[in-house]
Image 1 (cartoon, rainbow, N blue to C red):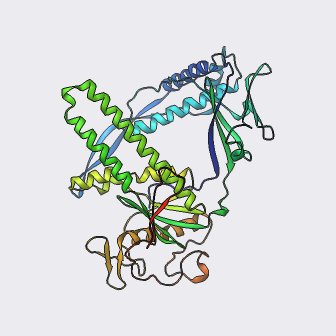
Image 2: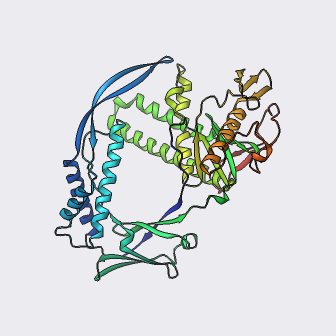
Image 3: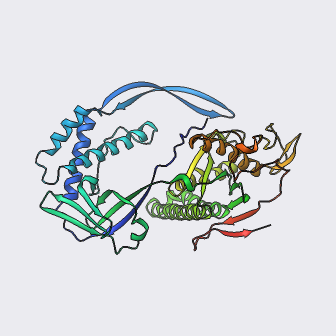
Length: 439
């Protein structure tokens, strides 16, 4: 079973930035102080328990195991503790009392994030500290008029209010049917969250996505085999890796100057990769607006081998990040990745690998490995989608005609086509994927 728990989205969430000139009278700084005080009190009441943890590391094709004793934090979350915490923080508080609830929520969120990273070995046993001033505004402190586009935020009850007018903002037409969620206030700007129930009725197509080193191979029940070329992303990372490796090799000669250059190129690499993935996922969601995307729940740890070049190429992949970014723009589900490229899509038997991208079934003939992968992911995704949406969850291959969705393929698969039906590449200066090879 896949490690990632699948959950269908229930609402659409969008966030936009709006400028304001209101004098908040130190509210952001006071909010951060009270949030930090809440963190301090919660931290003092954490119960640390010893627990024996089992670890593993890979040696060749086998694993070796060892155990360590770790201190596991138990964060106090009972209602009595939260009530006492709220009463304590309300003393000498000059603004609306609902800001205290936001401060407590912020403190628990920060400690929860720290705990998750601490358990994964990414943080030490150090208390979280807030540095940048902001205010978390609950919906109980706001009133939103959809017709006029005005959001009224209470600073001090019946005394002071902040009015944000979004009717003239560029995004107003996009969010006029949305409700307002939480708002993050800063000195001269506000981050406004808009929410709307998510309608799954327009999602009519399941697409299987096979993640490869330099491409995403998709199986669409109508379009067939579609390839998204990622060679530009791979090239981009390789170019910056060469520069960074050269700088590391001469780091000892001028640590301060080389350190600045390393930081510069790391940030440039990160920003360009982030830009590419954002455009890729946006253009992919626009190309298939009615689709549910099915990805493999991959774990790179099990894929490394003794080939250092392959391991470096594997490090340059962004499979999980692409899927996570796409979750913000479409519906993404995950399936078990085991044997997706080795199972015959016709009879279900295990196939033998040949040279290159070819796999062979003794009964059904030869297929392209990447096509087989995306098609088998598609089949598993159909079963999963039917299960989550209340269907019967039967497999595509071998199912009765009346049991299939209207857009699912019927009949038997034929031996492979050597190339995808259509191939796309990311348009870094446009809004849509570009067709660069169409057989």
